[in-house]
Image (cartoon, rainbow, N blue to C red; front, side, top):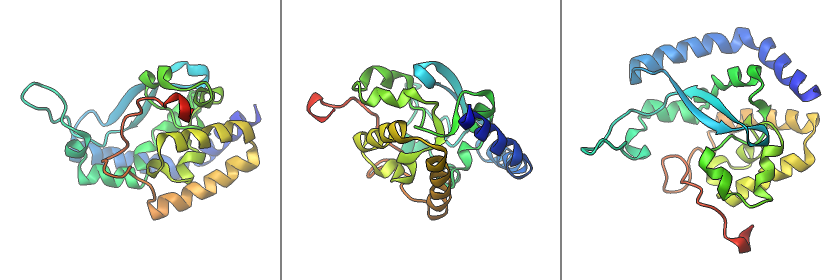
Length: 201
């Protein structure tokens, strides 16, 4: 309850700062990428329960002759890269925080299909609400391997505290300013997680 109160208090307190930014970014997304302005996708949250996460759209809908979406690297525009590097695309998730789907701090909510690919230890990341930012994000973000990210996620679950949350918030500001770990090596964003070999779990 303390963590939930902390989340709501900070988000509501900061409304005069983030709401105008959301309005401006929404206008630019509409101008640069068209509609829809928001990207909505089902993600697993606390205890693996599914919710709809909301972000700003960062990619076009370009498709090939067969109607299939083109690779992320092709659809991710310079404007979209800017939104991602500054984490402005994450701002609409504050609505998810207010709804109780997410927390400010916690493991990032990933794709639903990954649920069956986690090892028992990796699945512990769902013992807490997912976050807008988290320990894995300030320790390297997409520059980390999936296994490294999940280890940081589980470490957060095992050691979480209000003091740690405050530290992660501060480290997030630095990570955003220096735009660290935006994408994985050789990837426009982050490659698909296909599961961990038993010897590595």
